[in-house]
Image 1: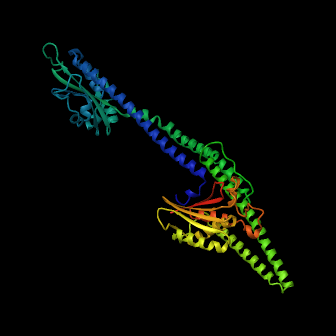
Image 2 (image 1 turned 90 degrees about the horizontal axis):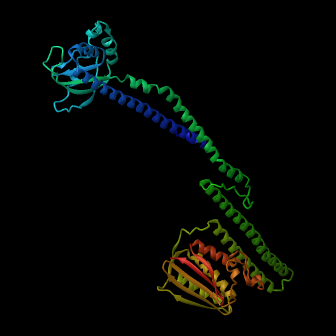
Image 3 (image 1 turned 120 degrees about the vertical axis):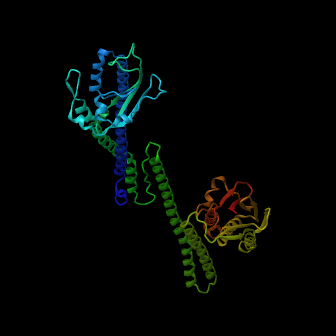
Length: 496
């Protein structure tokens, strides 16, 4: 089954499974119905046999001398066994099956007048005398007792329904009247009638069971086909998506089920891919624009230097342009690496002394941005503050924040470091112009500059804050602008 079952289509597997289950269940139901009919018929036959046993017992108890021959005819023509005080009455049943008498004992001494019992008795082969001489009635007519009824009982397990009765004949006992005492009357319940009634259902059930299984399998096939139509529609629509950013969306079914959630998840994935494609195209366009400006400036400076070799200032300008171009390329490579593993934390993390790292960068800040003063404010319960991370990337993150703060500060940059339960908070504040509320998220977009009056040489490339936020996210942290009217502040939160 493992070889061919997985290769079948979903609707075929569903139809086969449903049809097999229906076949098993309907077969079990058919067997139960056959058994129930047989059991019901047998219960009815046992009730009828008990009623016959009581009727025969009453008739036997009230028989008179002139009716003795009639009673003999009953015993000769019916599968009846009467056990009296002196043993079984002579009839064809004990004569044909003498071993049966030992299996059906008389009613116990403690039995009440309404005593009744049903015993299962195994009939063997009839005696040879029964097969040779037919029974006869009082009129001398042969009866089919030993010839037909014995053959019907032979080799079968038969229920014997028995009742007891007390016989008290009026007057003195006679030779023809039954003797006083307790009599037990057994009537054989032949199971052939119940079997015939149950077997009459077999032809109908034999056709109904496979038909029911077939109908269930077809219904499962149709239902599965209709259920998979939305999936096929989703597949067809996805097949038309030739590139990210095309705006294609799959249809969403009305029903709230797994397929609807699949369609919504697919559309969300397409939204993410489209947003990523737009971001990538915008990044490529911005990167090309940003690279073109320093390259063009560098070529211009070199052309001047070649044309006027006596001007040493041209080489200094070329060096500045090359340095800016190098920083821009480094930023682009950093973003490319971060985009290649979004949300990943470096595997070679190690404990980093975050407090010492902030101090080192604040010492370097006045040298990199002349005129700016820096201050570190520690608001921590423990010092130093240690957190797991990648030292070079954390250094790049803090340096970008401090460079941005120094670039926009009027005179001062303040760094506040605080340790909370499970988190480290680092606030970088400058006393420059505040960031408008509408731009507090836009400043983290790539190649974004809010101060258009600044030149590109002093205003940066617009990648520092974008790289800082991506690095914070790679450390499972956050970076956001702190609302305020006095200067600009950025809050960095990193897990400990």
